[in-house]
Length: 166
Image (cartoon, rainbow, N blue to C red; front, top):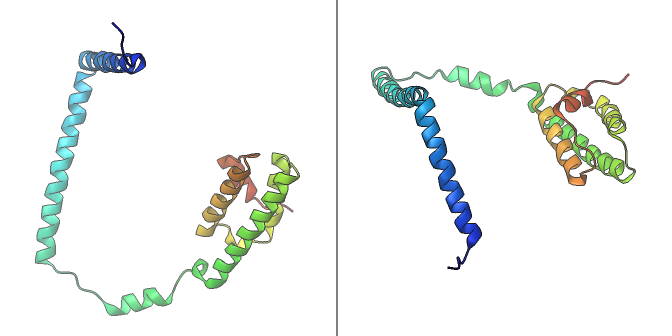
């Protein structure tokens, strides 16, 4: 008897055996936890349905009143980081970092040298620290480092990059 695809048969038998083994173990040792988990899941679905029904009833009973003066005030006072100038600054920094990381890769900088170089660059762009642009810049740095593959920075090292150099 010759089996046409022996590895496929082996994988199927191994997978089914593993599934049966873990089902028996789960049934034998973890049945109370499984029942409580399924019970909580069922209760949470019912709870969400009850809340949505009560919210719909409240919405019909008390329609929302909108104060137009609040909306106008919210639109006129945008946070400082949402200005066009900040966006242009972030774009300029991104372009600068792309060229410097490429140069660092070609000159084979070490990780501490790369971090120091980025700290010196970010020193001139300190207005972006603590804004949502900081996360965007961090993503750009990670993408560029991954692009060249020579140096990868951890989360702690990314925090270190934003520390100011004197």
